[in-house]
Length: 482
Length: 83
Image 1: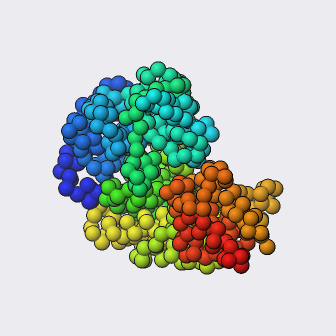
Image 2 (image 1 turned 60 degrees about the horizontal axis):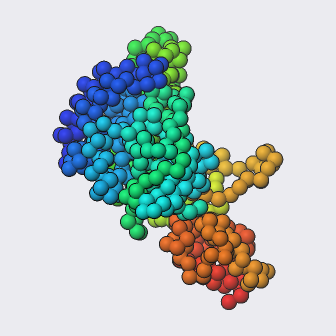
């Protein structure tokens, strides 16, 4: 983990946690879990015994009361070995329990948090629906007043942890188009129907099911609500989820990098180790720089854990950057391994399969990029050097299109990309200046060269929309996904 | 040039589209964020769509000053020379 300030004040506790995680991971068999599409019950019991399900739950409920940074450190360490287990734990600590911890009524917290802290219940989060994926404004699951409580009806899909959940947090709307509210309920409640496990490309040992809600009655306390004027509750919960997803991607990237480097050091071709070939050497150095920036961005994101608007923006940038970088490094590690790279026993195919969904779930990357780009137009851009290209692009778009800039979807997407690169670059530079983690000035140089290439690429890719529409033979809609 | 009546109609339609309220439910005094649930991005998107449909020249800075439906209408009418 970025053992570097993400959890100031709890460093020793976190180091002790990580030692415990290390011991636990020595018994984990990710390939076997993947083949069986299941996490063994004794493994989940061991995670519970280690207190990992309660890391972020307040001590008065039996948890450790640690920060999001501490949770990120554990999720990152577990993802180095088994992404399905990391996803299960990360979902529980983030999307699954964050809403209840932050906004649950005392009766609700008393009833469920002790069990959640001890792992007697595992938490799941149900937001996605057949007609509402990235577009959560299209949610159809309804919550209607029923006496003093609520009645829920709707269909949820892709519910991570749903198959073994002891508690569900469900997103539902009270009237069509109203902002989603969150409701906490037990999967054993009458009217809750858990579907069968999905067969997936990756993260096969984690649980993913559809859930149907038919006239499910809950009491009034089951509705979670953020205070008036605060960032909407769904945004706050998603921010925690995206931070932990990013932590998992950082762990996966570290493993891919380690495997690539070990193979390049040991494998000899053309009379020398692969690492001694310029192209391979450059590639692995780039992977090191990209992974160091991901860890630095994770650390910076965790610092903002208690500042919802800042966490929302930074966690989105972390989620996009870390998922893309982890994918690129895993793909590159396979390439460096040659034919061996596609053999399951190396663990690389599993790593790649596990990582694919990270660019999709908890906010598809393209949607997040477009929204980040739109946000860049409405909020001041930082003065630091890594943000210079972003500032220039924002000014250019504003002066060319004024208020109509918000209809330039492709340009917003590009701004979002520039913002993500700037955030990662700034985090890496800060980590080097403050001598945190293993990042070096050389990593910064390599990152900056890569960033310039990325920026040039985004410029070259934006051809006139009329050309795109001509190729497609159809009009392309404008507007920012909400 | 759009008539005032149709300008107001276009504005209410766009606001309704983004907020999912019905045009007839929307009042001039409704605040874009607090009453209609538009966040900063979607309220900017609304003004962007308005500028496009009515062919208005509105700067981003002007758009960011607007808080209510009435202010959107007033800004549009100023730009169209109606006020």
